[in-house]
Image (cartoon, rainbow, N blue to C red; front, side, top):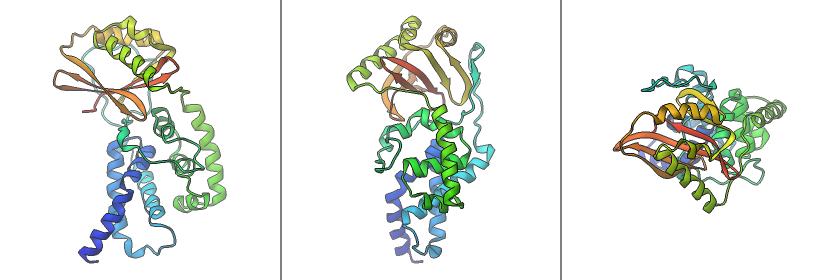
Amino acid sequence: MSSRDEQAFRELADTYRRELHLHCYRILGSLTDAEDAVQETLLAAWRGLDGFEGRSSLRTWLYRIATNRCLNALRDAGRRRPPEPVPPFDPPEPSRRGEVTWLQPYPDELADSEPGPEARYTTREAVELAFITGLQLLPPRQAAALVLRDVLCFPAGEVAIMLGTTETAVKGILQRARASLDKHRARTTHRPSPQERELTRRFADAFTVGDLDGVLGLLTDDAWLAMPPAPHEYHGREAIAGFLRVTMAVPVEGFTMTRTRANGQPAFVCRHGETPAGLMVLTLDGDRIRAITRFLDQK
């Protein structure tokens, strides 16, 4: 094909790049892996353009390629387990070791696609950490089918073609995926912006100065703390208190928390002076904080 054809394809494909990126992130749970999958998708689409016969829309064709690239990535275990970080202190025994250590946050400014009229989840719900984590715990084909059908509203027949199966099989896959996801997802209640800002401000003020009681007083009784890519998770106020008591005992100069948003949730960019110190995402439940997820390797 000519350079003019290539340029025309790039311009057309770029209109779908952003939504494909979010699609790949939902299935893979990793911003880095999603970026790789989108690049591979567009390269494969360009190379296979001569074979595109127009029996489906370009968007559907691109989603089919992207979904299968994601499924291939999930079969490669080497891409799923980042190195476990070694803390500069001796942490207490965790409540459990989390499975989804590859999870990365998704910037809110990238998640702007609107759900279709048949979507079972709102845009915000479909990018929350609880939802993304739940997808990672499903078998890959179940996760892909649920995203394609319940989030993106592709017809069951098109989903079957994308996954190389039958429409009847898709219905069974979806039934199992929905039941499993409902078990994994945490129940959250979104607060109006003023109350949310006040709650998160109080949390940041207490955390920044090492006020352990102040932090614990803002948590639900069943709150939990996770730190991807570390597998350690602390469940309940007592377990979280034990962990924070150790970490807050380590003197840190110039620790700051700057407000941002990720995965449709309030978040803070953390720094030790000029040194990046991760991204902290809060999951709210009523007038308390249900979960703290601190992504240790975010710059």
